Length: 291
Image (cartoon, rainbow, N blue to C red):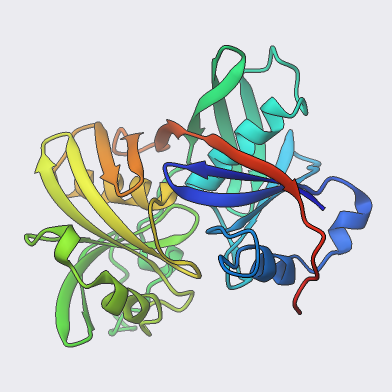
């Protein structure tokens, strides 16, 4: 099984061309659990598959290290775009791709440097803000559903937090902190937030500092993966939450441990994310798959 190891600002993936009919019958959750293991496998934050699509140029699937499938992955889909372009699956004259994901079709712009894709612009879709669309379980089920949850109270590990909840095709809870994100105990509180009963499909959890207008710093605990160096959908959810709170303008640079993403949102339409994608190495898996 041939694969490419790739990353988008430190968020790393095993990418596989799975366009053959025989590939569709594989137990991909088991493959993900095996290959993503950093001690006994290749090691990555997820498994990305290139699959044929009846409605777009390609179909994108991404499995977390625990074998669960994600609806969308911002850094992973940039790696996906670089893979299909640099491996000759599209003509070199192609600058845009339409890619089917579980969260809907996403449009990707290919930014090349000396003929090789270096950065990718991703139309990430329109954010969903209503609790039922994220989803978030509200304590008062008979009350009218609010349009947005700006300060949703959640208690984890004896700590009270107010989070802004956003769906970018997958669910996010964003907490703006006065304390430095570097000192926040994300490794302890992240899993408690992920599995909090208020979030029936679990949650991705972002902690954020406002550095200046137009600049944010962020750490993330990803559902099914744990703390990662970056999260594209998390950066987009953070930009949306910050704009809803009047903290940033239409464009914002978000600094994550692995690098920086630029996110643009006009306050009503689709979110645009721009960032790099890089090839680390390519190889062939000949080991067994643990079921």
